[in-house]
Image 1 (tube, rainbow, N blue to C red):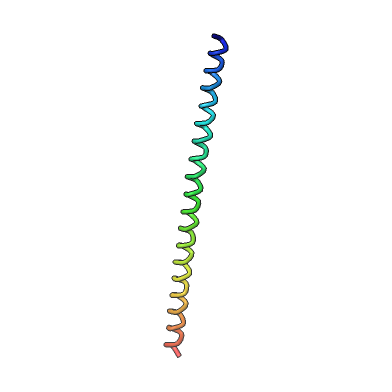
Image 2: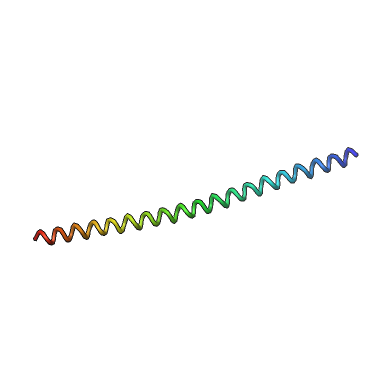
Length: 68
C-alpha cells in the first residue's frame, strides 16, 4: 500500500513538471512572436523615417532651385 501511494505521488509530481515545461514552452513561443512583431514594427518605422527624410531633402532641393 505504501508503495502504491509512493507511485501515485511520483506520478502527480511528474505531471506537474510536464505542465511547467509546457507552460514555459508556450511562454517562449509567445515571446518569440512578440519579438518578431517588434522587429517588423521597427522596420516599418525605419522605412517611414527614411521616406520622410527623402521628402524633406527633395523639398529642400526644390526650394534651393527656386531661389536660383
